[in-house]
Image (cartoon, rainbow, N blue to C red):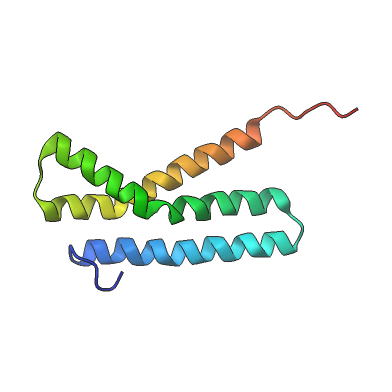
Length: 107
C-alpha cells in the first residue's frame, strides 16, 4: 500500500484495506474462540469480502474503461477504493439478510 500507484489517495486506500483485512480476520478468530459462531461468521464474511477486493478491482477497471474511457491513473484512483468498499457494502447486505432470515421452527 505504501508504494501504490496513484499517489496518497491510493496509498491510503490500500493501507486501510490491509489493516481492515487483518483486523476483521483477528476479530473473527476471537469470536470463534469465544464460541460466538454468528459473530465469527459475520467477521469472516467481511474478511472474505476484503480478500476478494483484488478480483473486484480488476472487474471494476474493465467496466469503467469500457464505459467511460478515462485516463489510466484516474481509473486506478477510483478502483483503489471501489474494489473493497463495494465488497464491504455487499458483505453488510449479506449479513443483514442472514440476520433477518426467519428462524426455523424447533421440533
